[in-house]
Image (cartoon, rainbow, N blue to C red; front, side, top):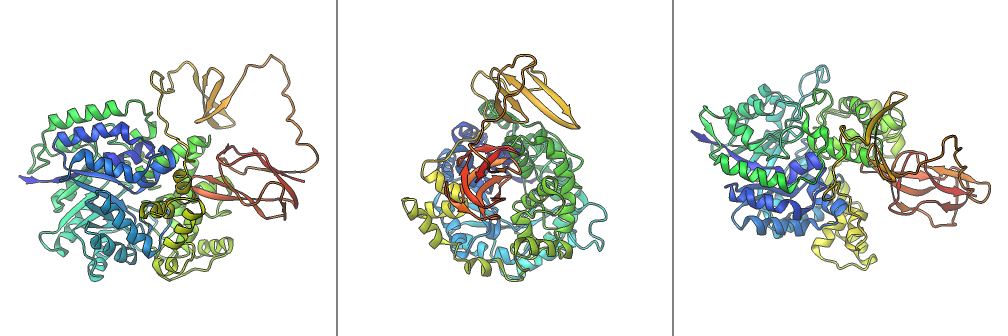
Length: 597
């Protein structure tokens, strides 16, 4: 029987696909140890969203978590992280010195292998990043990104086909990129079993006989086991599997599920399934206080038409909950297909999957193509590399006009290395301005995590992990204090708990009013003036001017973050500004942010 190797993705991709990576390391580390004791030796241990999330949500240092992971599993385990080519571990692309620093820091903090991919399959984005990974003494798993296209999207039928992926692999080989293994990565889980089989078979013919071929997918569209079986039959040596409670649904399939699917065949995972099941019990106990979003447990038949990866799906629904607008989710998913179709068919995996969702979100909230998400706009203009096909010319024109940027054919490294705002030098200046120690780790945190990274290092980060308190129960549909209301066609889930009411994930203070009592008018702001209201929910992250400053009409006064996007709030009149919010405040649509007199 042929042994099929597997990597356990539970502690990175699984967390991202269920909890939006909002987890505490101390809670899940006993499960890591249990998995090690069950004989598992290959773990996904960080990178991707699991680098930024500890700083953004858990008030933890991702480098410390990587060190703890290594200590827990011992020196011999293969610890793997995920890198997004020139984007390394963020949505924003980086300069050469930061890409090099990424590889060196991950080697220093216990990583064995880095899987390196580019969502656009632009091989230029893999050349230097791959070199840095090998130069740092790490194993390099170069990747080809996959997804399917809905019927009629690609009129010529030349994109995201087996032949397209084979051509991408040929470009990798022609570029002389050094690698230890090749991964075909389908984060959205939309590739058909037939496409997977043909792609792996073509790759097996192209590569030296002893090259390790890996296939990665999710269950989001319901075809993961069938795809894995076809990949194995075509010659794949390794697949990615997860562990309950972060398996199936938006995640990769479970180790036990795959073990069962291979029973009676010529292939084996070569595991003690009873020990694995015991490890899953430990894991389930570790995570019992973390509420599981219902959408993370489902196979969604819309995904082939709106290819939203599991890792992006729940992260975005959590942000929608945070902002009290979960009722917008279906509209955003419906709008996403057009963003893919007109955006050049970049693979729907981070960061491009987030660009698609952000643009769909803007199209729903502000009107179709009235406001370009920064990442989406820059992608169609060429600032993240070359898309598989040319984006819709109308979309390119609109993005250029709105963003004040010309389309470019320069490589990402050419652009970023010439940008004085990117690299070690500006990261050093940020640290020094905040009176923080300039270390390699802090430099990378400042570059990869921006202002949120600086806030963490200054001790100003806030914890936002939706963990149920001990003894409390998560709200559910059978809770007597929870109901769903349909108001003008929009569904709102409302939970009452004492003097608190939670509406679509946002909590408000409430009190009982006397019957017939009229609402009190809002307190006067102290004189005639123009109020500036929030156009969307989010969080106040910075002020562009000071309290009392004189501002011009159209001048940016506040920066708000929503859905990982920064939105500039501009003055609608000239005068002296008075702020009604402070940094870190969560805001709802229509909230008064400032007054101008």
